Image (cartoon, rainbow, N blue to C red; front, side, top):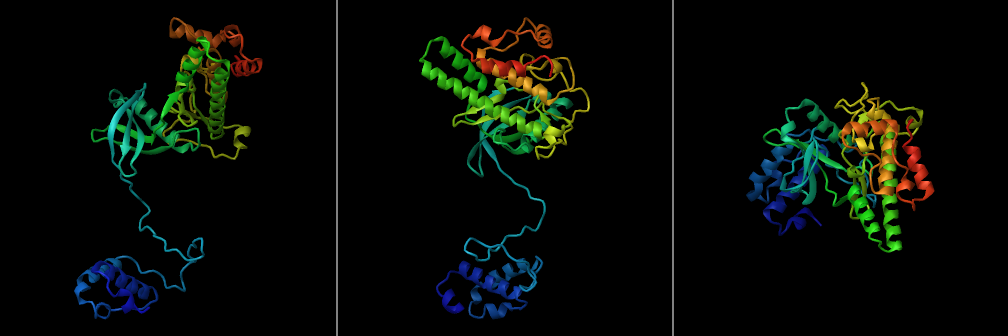
Length: 368
């Protein structure tokens, strides 16, 4: 088919595109087609074509085909034309609308919203306005966003981006998890157990909690292999999605630690956040008292063993329906944690399997 036959019956826009393509192809061969030659038969589109050619002239001419590097191939072996960006810096813009309050925490509040460009539901976490002038809180918020974004694992919520409102309130967006916390699931399980529901149903729900707990352990193992200690593992910081997802959230207290040989041999690259969470001081004392390790409660430097203790304390609540430590005030709870004074799980629930109790007690040993 000749070019005249191919262009017969085309509208003006399609004709411009075809003529421009012919001009670019000739240019790549080192030839120079004049506008007069191209538009000899189509004078009515000369102005539009001239404007398009001038735009192309503003970009560097590609190398001749004999000098070009091999092109990428499609599945059928044909060469694909690749859109090469003209800059190394890209700005992605997206609007989030229909914000609705979801949950409030100590550092910030989480809303749900709709990301317009992709028409998807997202979670947006904002730093509390009352903390905007508090430097440590701002740094903690940035740290949480960075660690969450850089720890790429199925058990960690994907972070989509960070931003700031017009009035200076920082926020970051992430995947919205439709589900409940492990804390809620544990309360429901033990409430139903006290109501003497069918044993088979109870066994199934108990196994679901244990499977979710194993997923949490794998997620924390990954973080430890990257040199990150969470420092605030507890059932309330574990999300259970509607479709079986188990995700560890709230990495705002995470800290980067020096890895020993076991973790370096994992093959993972050490993550050292730019927000400055490396363990340069003690770093102890942070976390939730009822799930805090004795060394954390004593303001000693955190290690992966501190997270393992908190995992044991989380398993304790799965087994017993209550935290291992309680008291009239924070000082009393801290003292019990440091001294390791808590009831054995089997003294509270006689049907707890001995193997699970052994795992729990080993993780919660007084010595790391």
